[in-house]
Length: 589
Image 1 (cartoon, rainbow, N blue to C red):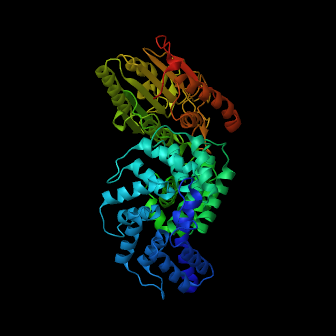
Image 2: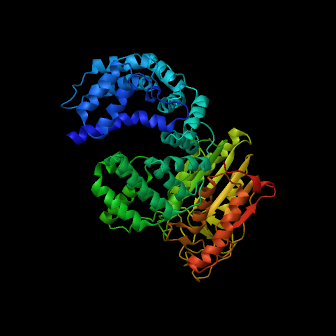
């Protein structure tokens, strides 16, 4: 018990010492020789250091009697909870003693009174708490300035919100060496909460706070290294920083069960960013076994990427096993960390058709995954409102016709001011006689083009009304081949070189393959190789890219990687209409 009391007393005394060590302006006037009760306070501290609590309190009381307000401040803190076997708790007397020191302009007491009132420890008006806080901060008392800066940032009763003043004061406290201010300032730069994001400055201040043992800073730095935000991307460093966060949190005595779970969750998410599924599964198993309540709370939370992703993956696997179907589609890097853009796109309308499950011919591996993920990028990254997007999985001929008709109606209403985006993943087929190309609906027949949707008709329909831009993206080939390279329709087993349909109006078409080539899958990533690199560039640029830049990147990467991954040539093609002279500069958002 003696050890407990000593520790408690030392923590109380450390509050004043902390302020003196970390402030360039405020110095305790009662710590100087000649101050009232100085000798008594010196003796009190000496007895505390050797563990003599009785004499420590005796001389503390004598210093109080001589109007040493540092003594009054410390006594008030003792009186709030009491010191077992030595001093009985007395909230009324604690309040009276602290108020006396505060009214005599003792900065730590003014700060303490404001905290007590704000936190409901003692009754009082928040307007009075604000007055005490401002008086303490005006004297240069760093903890008060730090708290006041936060109050200005968010606003509080008695303190009007003033983000400019709050940021300036936070930076002043951060420069003075206050770890909490350094962390707050880093968060402001990291999130862009009160201005533009600045990852370089965020990293600077997170590092400064981490150097002072602010353990949460290590966690944010880990994410920055994993994403390459303001620092060079380094996954190993990111994992090391998660480990340091745990150590520093334990040393600070602040690592609750939830905090431990959050750090483990962060480590798992970084493994997902790396594409290290096996390591992520190890973390997932540990998180489920050790912190089941954390998992339960977060399994549907959009912000908790790791728990939500792993839980959904697990559910999908169990469902697949129960139904006797093959395992789920792999989750790749482009399926995680989909960039979010708060800016709503100018009038843009999208139709996304993903045909995977066919009635008369073989399925198209990963087509649904392609369409579903592209839809998420349209919403989150390109900023297209969900009401402006029509997503049709496994579309029939009637479904395709209806959605193309909807787009023409939109163009008619917007009178040339709408941007149109048409995406298709699925089978394409050629007419063996005319060499014309067709999209194959899920109810279509591979050797009967009358059951398909003619590309010439698609282009004609989408150019029948004026539009600001029409972008057509086709993850399909029209040679009669399947994604595995085998033949879909040709009885002779020979790929047919479909003719290149000519876009019309203000249109550009980006197609996955040319001539008699096949649009291959990227099995490891769970996407068509064309769509994978399309999504990859949208992810890297956060959608801030022109159609020309996107087409150049996708064409180059698919040409290179299809040879490596599938051992076959696949050459995406770009076909602009004669009217779309500026298509390379078109913005996707």
